[in-house]
Length: 91
Picture 1 (cartoon, one colour):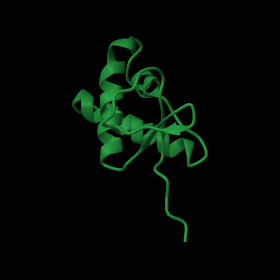
Picture 2: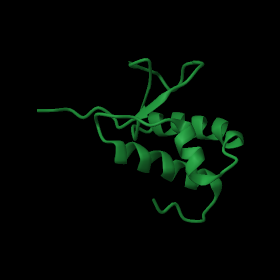
Picture 3: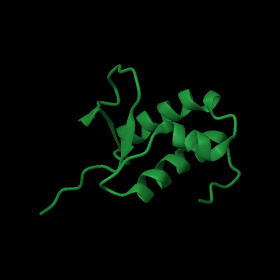
Picture 4: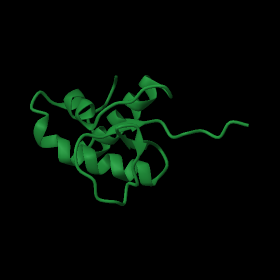
């Protein structure tokens, strides 16, 4: 996965979208996966990755879930989350 050398938020955002896309509609990824893709010392990046996941969900680029339930990116939640591709209208 080529993540480039731009500003950290841009690289984290790109990692989140790339990982969700690579997993496809039937799977998900975690914010920590994006942080791990950028740094060996990934834990300090995790809060920023979670916030960027919220921003991407607000923009409709990804969907956030927890224990199979969709999360509202503007609501407070705690614990591990998953990042999925957005649900597509089938018609």
